[in-house]
Length: 434
Image (tube, rainbow, N blue to C red; front, side, top):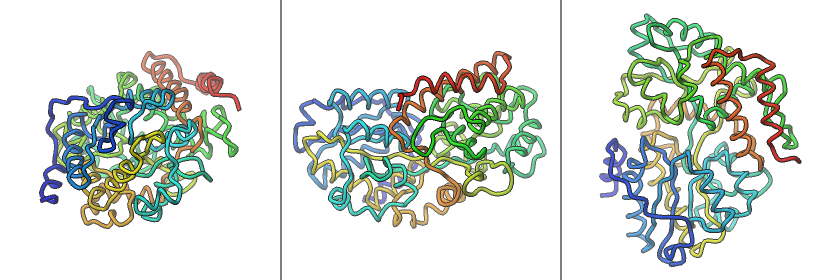
């Protein structure tokens, strides 16, 4: 029965009327031992699709435990502010999803339950999880503030129709090849590569990887902001130059927010995108699996690997528990349920991600070529964003600097080493002083 339902859920592409069923903590439900509130991240093509995927699983959990889970799916544009407000007010949910890059920042608020040995034991043990995923669960040397739920990595996806029409037979694997291929495709109102210039998190993900490729980082070894190093400046400049000087990105992409680049990709207007989980999001745009291909995200030269050959950040979603939950036992039971092999297989198949649970990864469903690229990237050539308390501020201020530089490029204003450094200097001044 469960496996039939899971198969149906994994193929969800429909939209339902969505009703938010939970507000922040402090509701009578949070104080009721048989009720939990859960804030889920928007993983599917819409909030409605996420509700369709998750609700049957929450119903199953209630059937098994007698604990009702009140679900709210929160869009990424609102999520961090909602969580920070909850950590300040103490009026949060019992359990929530967080972007794994925020783990150390949210850990520093003291609002999240530490996953010490006892709490890990309650959910089945720490050794069930993949090491790379555990590397993005909080400040090194401290008990994790969350546990991995979905694992992802960036890859380069290409539109096979556009490649065939342009006579391109091999997808690019280095940045020089991306630019050369992109220039062949950028004509007659079509463009080589799509970006989302107003998507602050995506901006950070891309320039973080490029900084690694330039041998740099945005923080020093002791956790101090270091946004204006030559490598960091070169990384941001390289990314914005894809629009400003290489002209393989449409100027209108400067205003694109989350998921807006997908429509152009699906409608044969943009030939390539750097993306994380394609199956459901591409399908929601009407693309069949045979319409697109995938290769590892580009590196300067050669093949992806460690150090300067890093080609993705360790992307993913973690699951956390608010420390002041009035139902700790139920919250841990829910985390154990969601990280069980069966749920990990079902949910990660539904979202096109990879389970961070070792045993669940062995399921044959994760041998699809597109998921193999993600698994290999996570295992060999992805790096975790800095797990520092100021990471969320870093995403905001540097992400905004990149957004403003894309606006300059779209308007025809020059993007130079000096203008990039000035934007990054301004961003660094907005960071907390250490």
